[in-house]
Length: 175
Image 1: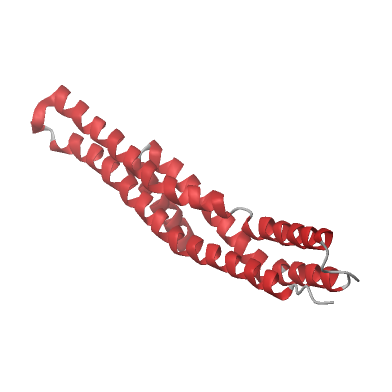
Image 2: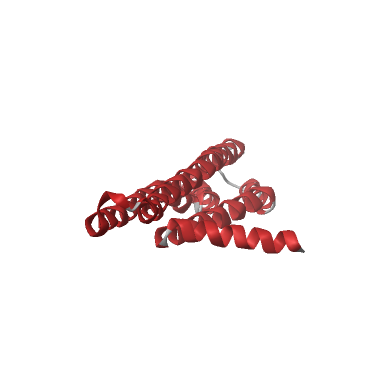
């Protein structure tokens, strides 16, 4: 139980080092990972059932060669593509936002350093250290957040494109 308290205190201290921008970065990373986990769960559970239902609906049609049938096929594929790609654009946006928030943290931390320099000159190293940590910690956190999401969002995007392509190939127009 003590390890839980120690972990909480370490996280609290780390959040205090980075200043207010680090809280925004943490919230962004949290939302990004919630969306990533949701997509992974969707791909592992609902995706196959949805694709199978669409294939069965298409194969159950008596006529599949007319212009109307082709439009229905395109509609089914489009609806599947929308459901498969839902949330991926938001994840990509959050991945791109992490380094920008890190840069914002760098700027605000450097402003704190310059304020200390303006007030006390270059002699107060302790006061400058707080501003330096407020400048470097959010930068690191933003980069770690972006790197943790960029691989998975790439894998999710590729998987979504593959699944749509597989459905499109499996919906034959013979009959």
